[in-house]
Image 1 (cartoon, rainbow, N blue to C red):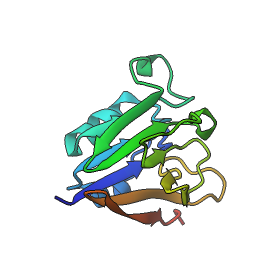
Image 2 (image 1 turned 180 degrees about the horizontal axis):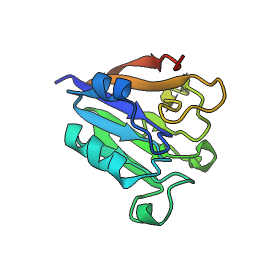
Image 3 (image 1 turned 60 degrees about the vertical axis):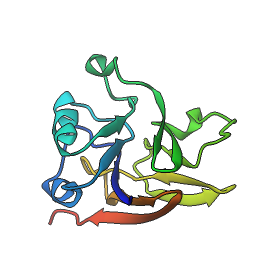
Image 4 (image 1 turned 90 degrees about the vertical axis):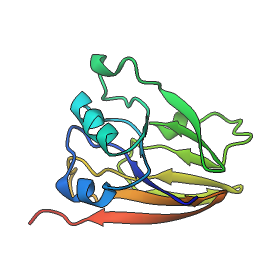
Length: 153
């Protein structure tokens, strides 16, 4: 069964309407941290099952969130952490590594493993792109689509 997964990070307290409209109806949501408000998670959980890690800006309210998370979707094994520098050296069995923190979109297959940073779709910093990703999974096959939200005028 094919699944459509929204991959977000670094929302920093802002869920843009353009993001919400594009992720409506997805089968799952991955959030790579720096959420900043628990209401963001409440909203996302109403859309689809949520996989989330704590970011460096997530304070006391987020103490119950894990700093790293391993999970499976379809036939793929995921590892997620907010800051890429905390990815362990041993990724045996992991197919996809999700991270955030830099606010810069990154997508590359390294040693047969997808490394994906969806960028930031929250508060804009300077002239950085406003991005997230849509991940379509069918068994062990996947397709990634970079989603870009236009800057406000």
